Amino acid sequence: MVGRLQGKRVLVTGAGQGIGRAIALACAREGAAVVATSRTLSKLRDLPDASPAISVAALDVTDDAAVSAVVAASGPVDVLIHAAGYVASGTILDCSPEDWQRSLDQNATSAYRMMRAVLPGMLDRGKGTIVNVASVASSLTGVAGRTAYGASKAALIGLSKAVARDFIGRGIRCNVLCPGTTDTPSLAERISANPDAEAARKAMIARHPIGRLATVEEMAAAAVFLASDESGFMTGQLLVIDGGQTL
Image 1 (cartoon, helix red, strand yellow):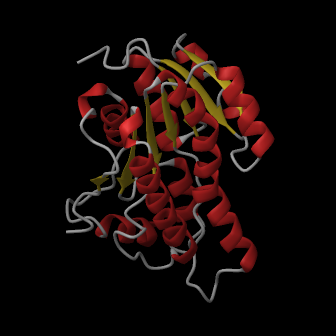
Image 2: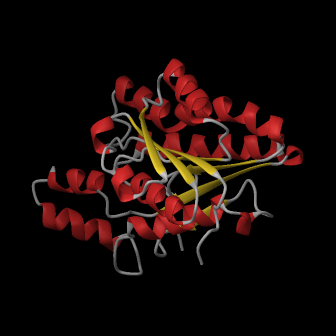
């Protein structure tokens, strides 16, 4: 099926690599005009070559002024897909106050900033869709060595449900994509930082009874579904795609 996002303007954060990049490309294939953003502009430069429907902008989602400026420059945003995030490793005893704060700011407060910026325009037009990318490492399940990450993604889920409830009668939908472990450049970096990278990768795979990691394309397909009118009767919900991790 193609054209599911025809005529929609989609703003994607965290589009420099991994899940966010795959989402930007998938939305463009479905007919959307996509504004792809990342803190690192150089990671975005080839996206307009991949699809003329994609424009790019540098965006630090922890910067209020930058968020306001990019949203204002993007034009009417029909769909926000917030995929930017940060993975901190370690137990609570390993987690410094700085890493704790960074996790909350990049994974939860950033969504607060983005939604506050796009919601007024959506409300003026009487319609809008928000997709926040969280994780199964959240209020869904505990994952070893992910204290700050899991807490911040749980906060993102709670925030998303609050927004869904507050604006359900005004044409706004807000849902959450909760991936299991997905094969991304970020994951590869974390794996390679281990003394035994092969063992670390096998441990990541072992979390999933299905026997493999997720692909970014699988997560992008789920995000397109949540962004499209196909999920029009769905709000405040979690779409869990985790290869059986939370069974």
